[in-house]
Length: 341
Image (cartoon, helix red, strand yellow):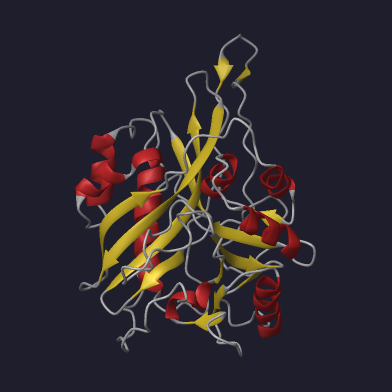
């Protein structure tokens, strides 16, 4: 069966969006790699941080390197439930960025409480709360892991930079599966589930190394770690390389950070076993944006099927034999590419 639950019943429209004052160092949409372009109104190109120690001033005192400038993520055109995604991102941005004095669980809980959310959510942040005196976070994108009438999963891949003890800047990042439920006046977050990609493999599969080296495939940190772990199926790697011959594309999630079951069902998803990947941007155009040419996204879906996927989901239902192609409200913002083995 396709990696999607039955379509939810009609829902009322979202409440008016009210953007909070952005805290210093919080972040928003960014492309997965340098030099990528996007139609997202909040997208930007983030500087590549230097992970070396801080520079030394004339008097011999190390001068800390600045953390990369970041931008807050904002929903663009075509979003089905924009406030659902915004609510999830607000939490990730608040947890993953802090200035001097903001390190630790106590300050993190205070930042969550300031959003009107349960402070205990900070206890579930995992790798998003490393030990560091300062941190900056940049959300790559917000994508549905599932959307029902009264609950949702939003996957939020992000890049994070932390201040090292010597004043240098260390890059990192993760993906969080943010769970929400409908509430008034806004949706509320009920749980956080950080990605768990596993340790790096002693020997990296050749196809994984080729994907990691391919500039036309843009991967967020958790997806990079998935490939480095050696736990991504060969069929996925080969399909990515095949698609990269004709497209540049940005991946949201491969295996870690995705719901274990197809959201709203008890059917296992193809993602956790390493047999699927999701794409949110093709040739610099966001899948969710109504201005993105249909032929571009539909052509990518057909190319994914030709590359061996048995289960291709996207924003529109394509003619199909069996269940090879599918579409629903969850897949308005990305293309799902799944494999049986």
